[in-house]
Length: 237
Ligand SMILES: Cc1cc2nc3c(=O)[nH]c(=O)nc-3n(C[C@H](O)[C@H](O)[C@H](O)COP(=O)(O)OP(=O)(O)OC[C@H]3O[C@@H](n4cnc5c(N)ncnc54)[C@H](O)[C@@H]3O)c2cc1C
Image (cartoon, rainbow, N blue to C red; front, side, top):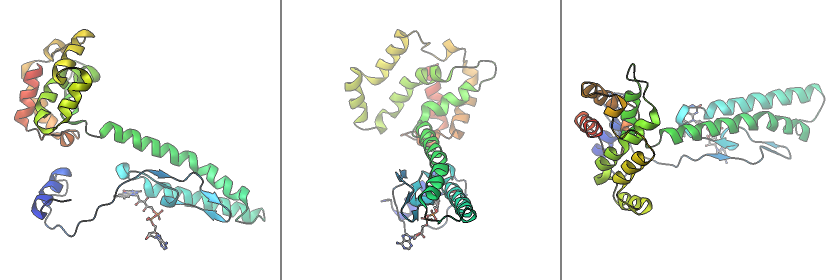
């Protein structure tokens, strides 16, 4: 948000992977935090909350308005039923039925959204590389093992871009992060190179190209080029 307009324009283009082509104009910028919130109760005396008044979720999968429509539909259904039964629309049994119908679905979607964010947030170069490696035909490489094998090289690559986190990690791990992870891999009997997993040099250029297109590429703390990915793969080979 603090960037100069032109720099912001370029960063925005990069962040959305130029899906909209060239961004030509940047108007005044506003920011607000995206927060997950959920009302403990949707209903009270003569009151029913619907939509974002009852719950807000991350717009990751564009589900917020849909949940709100679901609330409105359920509430209308319950009010219609109340009318048929000659009950007041404010009757607590009517409102409680509305709440019961909606809370479970809304909470399930909220939990799914949090899970999806945990999986997509900042996975960076390790996953940008392990996704195409895992898709190599005929090898069926294990995703977690690939991540473990790639991690030391990616840590070294990111070191210059992560500030004090490297030293903090070193304190927590009791040694240089890249060496400690490498040793851990050996200690628990994982393969420590890609070649030990059956990957060969000829496959690396295609993997480096594919990593650039992976959705995790954009979240690496240090922007990696195709050449950087190739170097990382060779280091891990
Ligand atoms: C960046 C972003 C992207 C999103 N993308 C999607 C998407 O792709 N698909 C999807 O389904 N959902 C999406 N959502 C969520 C969706 O926008 C909301 O869930 C939806 O707008 C909620 O509708 P609502 O009517 O409950 O609340 P709102 O849209 O917030 O409407 C509430 C209205 O009440 C007004 N108001 C507030 N206080 C008062 C007051 N005291 N007196 C009078 N009026 C008042 C407000 O000005 C506002 O107009 C996105 C949300 C964000 C932030």
